[in-house]
Image (cartoon, rainbow, N blue to C red; front, side, top):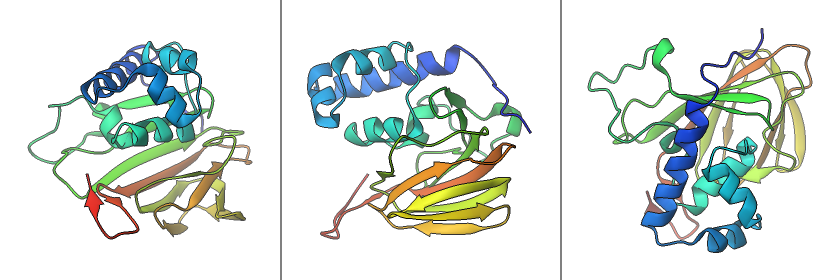
Length: 201
């Protein structure tokens, strides 16, 4: 079950544009953003210009620093559907060459409390070199295949039909050690959870 590419160039360009527009709207310089994330300014510039394909973990870190979620990055503003229905042929998607993955947004509106995505990991694919934490609670369901989940330092193999709830700020890494692709439905809470109990969009 190979990971199919829906588009080669347009998604990367849109992702870079969305990142740059959000960064500039927040008044954050490229160098400042890079320093916050411990990335090089050249890497951030390449991502914004569609010349680099970062890992899923790096994308999530960049989005978090810009007060965005992955789901918000993939869907152009104003493209939500009134019916709430997202057709399989119309799902916005981007491909992470580093992660050997394709991520599809299943989000139809931005005024909802849940943000679903479908992550397709090819054999050998990984969400990142190291586990990374999200500021949002997540629920994951294995739609197809098998995947190794590293959750707070513990490795577990999840197979089709398995599900897991992931607390906010937990360090997570997904790896596909199988010979076939795996599909993971990940639903994130649209509101960040902070230790103080104060929530922020």
